[in-house]
Image (cartoon, rainbow, N blue to C red):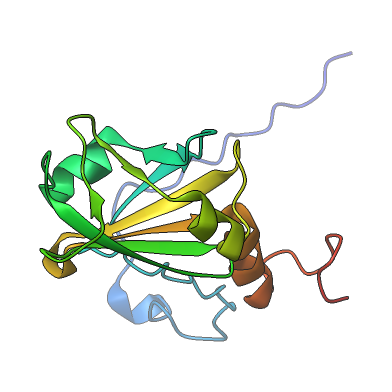
Length: 157
């Protein structure tokens, strides 16, 4: 016994008339998630990383090179909790060496809580002729203040 054959359904190649079709977009639209646009990276700041050694030296060749600081250039250093800022100043007390690093004096390191081995975020602003070194503790506080990972230890629940 054989089953009856069913004829295949093949759509017509002719396009249906506009009149018989619903207009595109008619009816209820589905919700679409909003796409957040991340902020653009600043073009006037160059970032790098460094580690403070036992002598207080901090280096990142690309960052120092972007500032154009040379051997013999005088620098003034200022500090606050976890942050040291260096700027080129003819009357500065610190001189750049031939190698591309700055030296943070021990008294200044103690004042701002930086110890040998601490990693720092370096931010150079060539237009202002400044280099800022921020401890990772300061960077962490800034991130937590934005609530990026609020449930991590030390974050807000």
